[in-house]
Length: 174
Image (cartoon, rainbow, N blue to C red; front, side, top):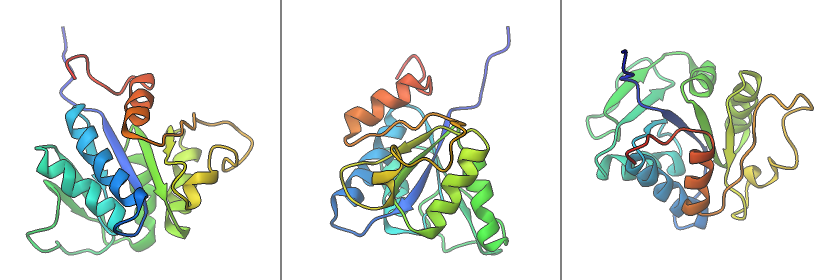
C-alpha cells in the first residue's frame, strides 16, 4: 500500500489593510489551515497574505512563499520554504497552480489575475465575503460562464473550515 506524503496545499490570494475585518480573517485563516494540516502557499506581499503566513508559522504550520523577485528575501520572511521565481507578474500562474484550492481575500488587479488563472486551471475558489473588496462579488460574478470550478464563499473561520472539508482537503485526523 502506498501512502501519500503530500499534505493538501491552499493558496492565500488577495489584499486587505491592517486592522480591517478582512485582515483579521486572513490571519485566522492561516492559523486554521495549520490546525487542519494544510500547507499555506502565500506570496506574503500584501498585509493580508503576510498575516496569513505569519499566523500559520506561529501555529507551527508549513508555509511556502512564491515571490516575484529572483533573490531570497530577508531571513525573517514568514515562510518555511521560499521560492524566488524572478518572473515578476508571471508568478501569478505559479500561485494559481500551487494550491489544491485558493482562498481569495479582498483583492486588486493582481488578485484578479491569480483568480482568473486558478479558474482556467480548475482550482476551487474560496472567496471571503461580507468584508468588502473584490472577493465579495466573486460568488455572483465568476470569471466567465464555464463553471470551471466551485466558488465556495465564507465569512467566518467556521464557514471556511466547512468549505475546506466539503472539498475533501482536511485530513481525517484534523
